[in-house]
Image (cartoon, rainbow, N blue to C red):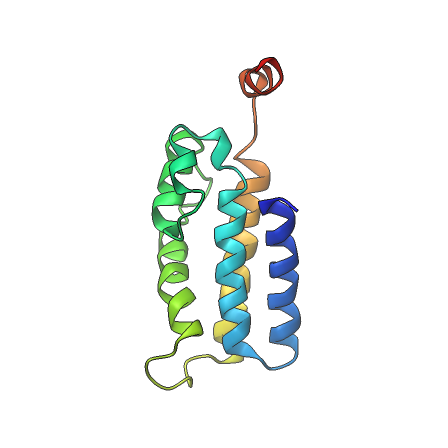
Length: 134
């Protein structure tokens, strides 16, 4: 399974968790889906290989953003994703922040990142030549 397919599965899991009132874990899975969607296109970005094993979603996004400008700036969403990826796994304070509305917000972030990856981070003819001539 590649990063993109894994992201789609995790994204769907986040939706199911939100529908069933498991908001903290929905946020965690939405954040993980964001990371995986972005990683699925790292091979198209110069220097992307250095981030494949990283969880540094902000720098993964920056790496992609150098080549693929988003229609909508996703930096704030990506930054929240980094923060709440850890906070949802290991809540240091109460979990009252993890409401239905909060989980739905992160599902929207995951949708935005998926849209960016699907529509902006697209291989061009040179990428295809490189892939099939090596």
